[in-house]
Image (cartoon, rainbow, N blue to C red; front, side, top):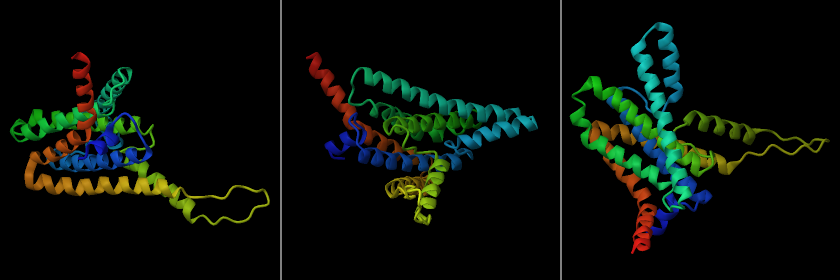
Length: 251
């Protein structure tokens, strides 16, 4: 990855285009992780709406093991977002170049460890399944919070329901028949650029899901290693910039 491109992709200085490109990469990673997680533990780890619904259903049916499992997943997702906020605010106060890259590097490390140890730990099923769900939910919360902070909540990488809703709204505007009005009401105009961005994120998530499912079937838990390396590559340049600056200041 060229140095300048890596610096623009996850560095502190942001642009609309760099936010979009980072969102596409992270949506692909989220889709692949979500699909792989389902094949591994039969749960989608970015679908908090479904998790909360599971808590409600299980409470009504008295299935306390499901309540605890789903509630733990929700808490882990929120904890990931909270850790992301702490890291970003910590970096901002110190004017780091890697203010947004640091959470992604943490996600890369966690995913790499999971990919390397997953096959061995899978033998301990009673511990492995809830631990895996919690870990992957934590990573998804961390990742979603990064792009939310970067784009000021304009882009999400795991909230597909919201993306499809927004695409539907813009499609409704696109097909709306504007008629002349004596009240000079502004015409209804679709935001084509927003449709393009949302569609690319949706396709990236779907493409990641297909790739993740195929990779997990052929590679097992090691399928997460390329995802970890991708995140590491995305975050490497700003982190290296900060390390270099720290060494230079201490010399």
